[in-house]
Amino acid sequence: MRTQVAIIGAGPAGLLLGQLLSRAGIDNVIVEQRSPEYVLGRIRAGILESVTVDALERAGVAARLHDEGLPHEGIELSFNGQRHRIDVHALTGRRVTVYGQTEVTRDLMAARQAGGIPTIYGAEDVSLHDFDGTRPLVRYRKDGITHEIQCDYIAGCDGFHGVSRQSAPAGSTKLFERVYPFGWLGILSDTPPVSEELIYAGHERGFALCSMRSRTRSRYYVQVPSSERVEDWSDERFWDELRSRLDTQAAESLVTGPSIEKSIAPLRSFVCEPMRFGSLFLAGDAAHIVPPTGAKGLNLAASDVLYLADALIERYQKNDPRELDSYSEKCLRRIWKAERFSWWMTSLLHRFPDADAFSVRIQQAELGYLVGSEAACRALAENYVGLPY
Ligand code: RFL
Ligand code: PHB
Picture 1: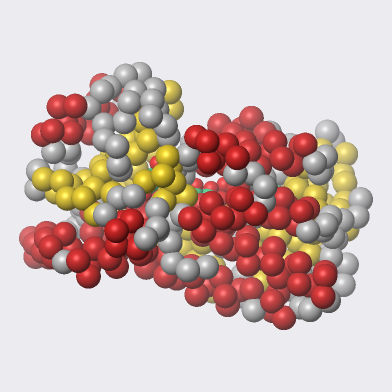
Picture 2: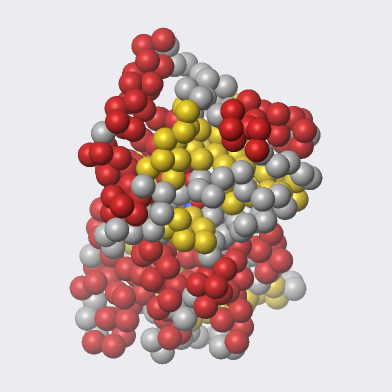
């Protein structure tokens, strides 16, 4: 098989890139190791920056997002038993939208299928070849048969554990990493959200987050030590722990119910530099990870993809490779700002097992300063809604 762009991974990054390229008349094939059902079964991000909404509009997949997404104009910070609202819209003129990654993925998959654009699910042993030379090639096995895709470019959109970053030549990457000594235990339940807006709670027992997917479906998280096992968390234990970390009013109005998903996500900051190796370009979690506290992972994947789609369009429509040449540098500028914000939100709100009394007081002082200072609130708000693309 031959195509212009071979895309590895059918997560939001790969699917969005495919859609933007197809709409510009650029042929592409997606190679995904899992099944569509598996991809749709992963419960992940919930908050879209306006830049991400714009990208989905450009991809022609925003109809349901506009119908069902919930625009949010503020967030609540909770600590010392009190809640403080940050009016993100008043401070920035912009909003975020609550619309689950699962739904974004579903909409992108449906559009791709409607357009009859090829996606190979269940591809095994995917490998990338000759992207430093003149004949880039993707090889995979399906149903016991080996297949090859010849292409001009390869987009590595296969997430943190994918094969693309690992295919970069030895010694060509610089990796930056911080692994946090805790994770987030998350629960999804068909119960009305405890609050109209998200509550980010710092508490001496650890961080908690009250989020949602719709007016009838809630998503809650509590910080747990990295050693924790999901099997040890009954629904009842989860709800008790969450309640203990919220202010009295939220704790009393929390509606509980059976979980429909429960999992633990480790927290990590990670960046791979550069993001280009000859004809191979990394995008999304394949190149960087942020802890979810700032709600930036999916949004960064979308901004990488916008840069990459525009650069490939310039290359094909005007035979101009300059945007491809500056892709990595342009992405990394935005990525490091989101890394900083996500690290800062994480440091501000979580309990660190090795924190001494001094660090705890500094954290308290920072929270107190933040909610008392319009300048500090604005800095948080402009990062939360997303820095300019
Ligand atoms: P994905 O979604 O991991 O998709 C990669 C795809 O590649 C496939 N794959 C392969 N395919 C072929 N060959 C191989 N060798 C392959 N190896 C892997 C995988 O099966 C998969 O289908 O990466 P992508 O597309 O870059 O998207 C990134 C986002 O998924 C991620 O950044 C967000 O989910 C992060 N995130 C959040 N981001 C936000 O913007 N806002 C949020 O509110 C938010 N909340 C979260 C989050 C992530 C979380 N977890 C579980 C890590 C909350 C949580 C709990
Ligand atoms: C989510 O709803 O899953 C979510 C929301 C905000 C975050 C992280 C995750 O910061």
